[in-house]
Length: 143
Image (cartoon, rainbow, N blue to C red):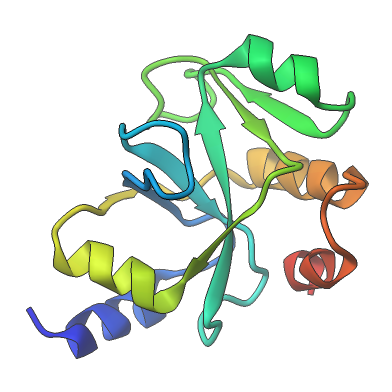
């Protein structure tokens, strides 16, 4: 497929709370795919998508995060999860539009259902509370 196809697909579907599932060993310590959650309030024209990543490593996240800066999500709350998960809202992953398109073109990205608003609101609140998230990113999240 051509790049314009994926560009159009992103523009037609992306919003705050969109979830993609793909591997990204250059940013994560694992080669396994993870759930990446778009946090930009207005991502349609963004060159960089600020994403949070879910994990099942509860102990590590709770050990390193301040209370209120992570969100636990039960598998019953989000149908795409097969296990209870946790999101460290202190570590946003900047993913360029071009990298996402490259992953799509390589057939490495799977679309997942958007997060329910109730979970998305918790993630936003936790990011805004985090002292590790730059103000410029917080503005993009709450724009």
